[in-house]
Image (cartoon, rainbow, N blue to C red; front, top):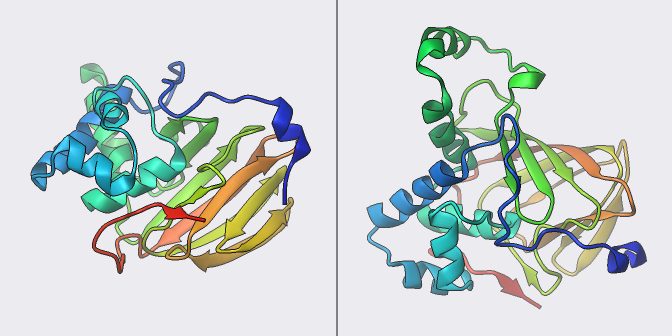
Length: 233
């Protein structure tokens, strides 16, 4: 399945740092969390780059907060480092609070309700935005509001990715392309899907409108592989 409209559109490439926006995680803290995870395991920057098949300079820029990864690269990084996406949201929340609002934040953290305006957000390279839908980090599920802007994709067509767990999604609006292994699907508003994340897969927006979906990933850390590697086809 191929979207001809996408040929005429451009989105920020991987490595381009998105403009700051309200509610988004701090780029420096996100990179710091990834760097801490790498150093905790005693993995060199070059070795990590080799494992996930990207350049050392890209990882260096991500760790220093100078660039944001694509969806595929972030999944590969967190899988290889044994991190969850929730940990990346959490590591960016705490330093962002103002000292005078500490007591208010502490009280809010006890509520099971996640207010729309207070969602924690990660804006990834290429026009993809993740917003966490749980009020606190959850060790068992990653529950996200996902937006793919026109022309956005999780990874290039020749480099599918995979990770631990199982994914469930419900499309709210727009059209979303999904490839699982050798099969491709087009999802529209009201469509839903579930699949094993161990299967090589890829996502992309179709048409001129953003593709918006609710996403849940369970058993994220249940990865049968010893190292994450992008799938080539």
